[in-house]
Length: 171
Ligand SMILES: [Zn+2]
Image (cartoon, rainbow, N blue to C red):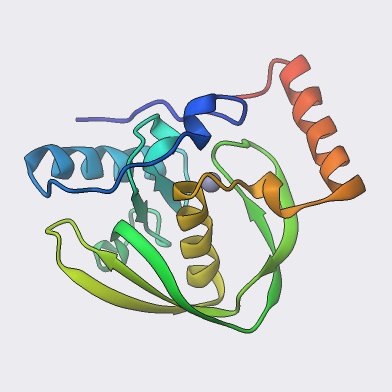
């Protein structure tokens, strides 16, 4: 058990297709534990499996960052089945370390997902929880932070990544 290295934007594994989770077994439990430990250590609010180069439709979320076990959420094969409203929020990503950008997300969503045992459930969420769920589900569809911004804003964002890379501060 332990942490796994988080891969960064530019690594093709981050946006490779993700296969459905089919085996809800001990190997999956081990992977989920490692994902929580990796997310907490970063620290982050959630982590998607492709961010540790595991191309599965699996993500973990914990807005308490390890402080409240009740907030640990496992999402296997998640889908957004309903979305309402729109809010503009600042967002970061562990695969774009040190960078933030602002764009619109739904204010509230309903997600259908399996838990670590394979049981389906529906999660209703708003604000930060909805934003984090959208963010992790985006990862499973190969969509990243940068895909939500356009034009000059996107150019500036890429320039900031390049600066960090040149300074050796990327990762
Ligand atoms: Zn992310």
